[in-house]
Image (cartoon, rainbow, N blue to C red; front, side, top):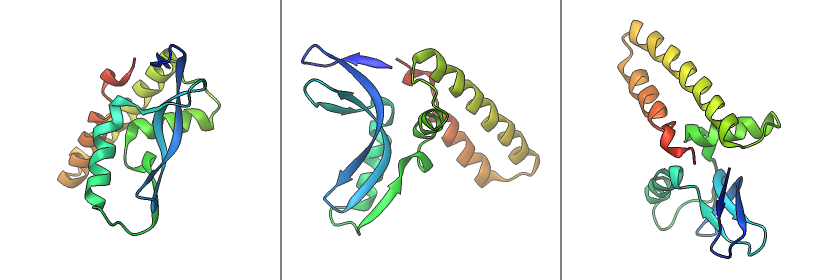
Length: 136
């Protein structure tokens, strides 16, 4: 998955570690990166959730490392694809997103049959993170 950089070069989607206030490392954040000018942009589909995560830490967080893929389904799908050496191309990402959506829907059926409202709420939140609007 690519987008055009302001320098005119193509930016590719990668997973990067984002550092917050020199103390917190947030690993596996989807970022568009330009090899020519070294510009990086957090992927729009995770930007709000990343901002909320950082906001909950406050201005003086404790030193820590956070695995973003554990906080956001989109990052988890991309990390899984990279681990399987699959290309991050729109078609293959869309296919994996559909598979993950189906997995979560199956779990939602189980949670519903168990009448586990907390689990159902968590699964709905994860499903909302896999919205097709993220594919560009």
